[in-house]
Length: 206
Image 1 (cartoon, rainbow, N blue to C red):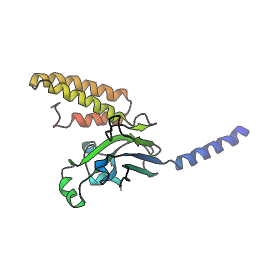
Image 2 (image 1 turned 135 degrees about the vertical axis):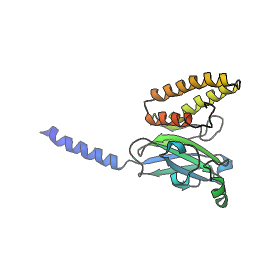
Image 3 (image 1 turned 45 degrees about the vertical axis):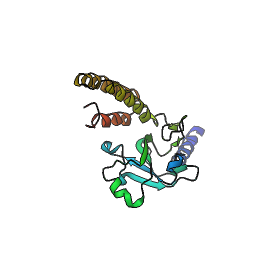
Image 4 (image 1 turned 60 degrees about the horizontal axis):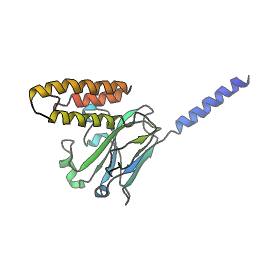
């Protein structure tokens, strides 16, 4: 009888906890970027994973004098999604021109996986680079940075010698490596991130 009374109580507290779920994404930008705006975006189109796209932006804030910024709220989906934080030092009057193609030389970004209950920090790296580390209890959060590291190794391999033979050999090798790594993470969004790279005709895989 007591057990039957406990179950509704447990469900009640679980519901309260879920309803109070709140995300917090914070970090630092370098001194050169403290005058720029920091944006939080939701990425639903894999073809627009990298870049500046106004239709994706959820929030805009300005860092303090130390470069610290923080986004928080309770309006994100409960399941893992792709998000981007980027800092932009373009002047307001120049943004329409600079962002026309989605790529901006005055922008620095980081993509990550998160949900409505995640607390995520973007500290400086050991060599004081911004947006090179993702600290979160969500094990999937920094999956993209790991894939990016493999992509850099791949680009180096392609650059050793520019020939069609080298391109074909390395394309097959790195396609397999990135695909297997995405599968090992057991996260469909990581596989989608790799696919977005594979399908980009501007990449050396093609």
